[in-house]
Amino acid sequence: MLPRILAFLLLLLPLALPAAEAERAHTAGPSVRVYTPPLRMPALGFARQLRVYLPPDYARGSRRYPVLYMFDGQNLFDDATSYVGEWGVDEAMDALAQEQDFPAIVVGIDHGNGLRINELIPYWNVRFLPNAGAAFVADLVQAIKPFVDANYRTLPGREHTAILGSSLGGLSADYAIHRYPEVFGKAGVFSPSYWVSDEPFAIARRTPLPADSRVYLYMGGKEGEESVPQVARMAAILHAQPGAGAKSVALHIVPEAEHNEAAWRAEFPRAVRWLFGLPGP
Image 1 (cartoon, rainbow, N blue to C red):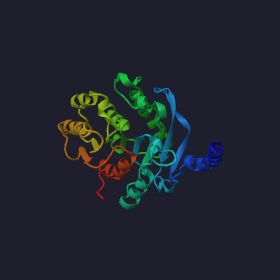
Image 2: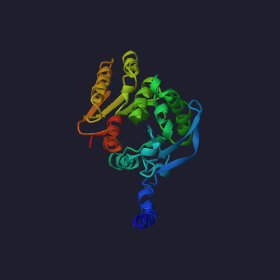
Image 3: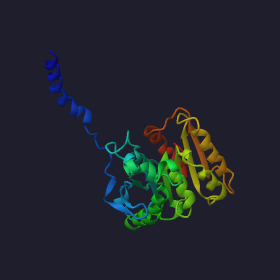
Image 4: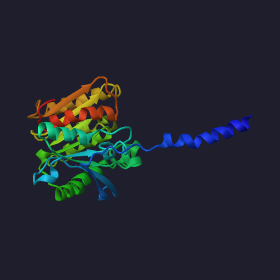
């Protein structure tokens, strides 16, 4: 009897596998282009895929646009390439272009999958060697941004250039605006992994940002007991800098939010509006 049951289950198994292993449908809109081949990153030593969102009116004129650079490109536009759901960046930017006349280019930079934790830590941390985050951001500044400025109609000045990421990407966005304030005038720092090092706080204390910089700090209240105090600590340091004020630093805590793409998707439009000085929803 048992062999017959096993044989029956084996017959059913192939029927169940396609549903379990079915690929998720692609959800990226027509305004998202995957740049091929991947762009070589000299300092990091690897090539990384770029995913470029162009605003709805890009092909219809000669207008130049602000640029938002974002980490974890796989998660931004397409559910099929995301970890556990995309951010809906293209839909959010389409809405801002239509409703508030704010068209902008978004450049998503793919992470290296298993290398992500190494390439997005820009500070010394012996647990996750090699710490390649400084090289990753250097390539963003020295290779990716020049490529984007040369091939797309951008507004290249720092006042039109933003950097945004979540988790380790948030940590790297914080690092980028402090290390390269002449390149990035705005940073969206979502759920930053400040547990990696105390160095971000030391750098913020000793290296004030230019007075016209804008930093948007976000954290969910259910991301760990140390997370909210750490991001509040950074906000206090930035608020204490010369010339800082309500237009320089924003801190948004969402008490019920967790550490996931759904929370960051919900926060993204609000952060973009604040960073670029657009009216609220």
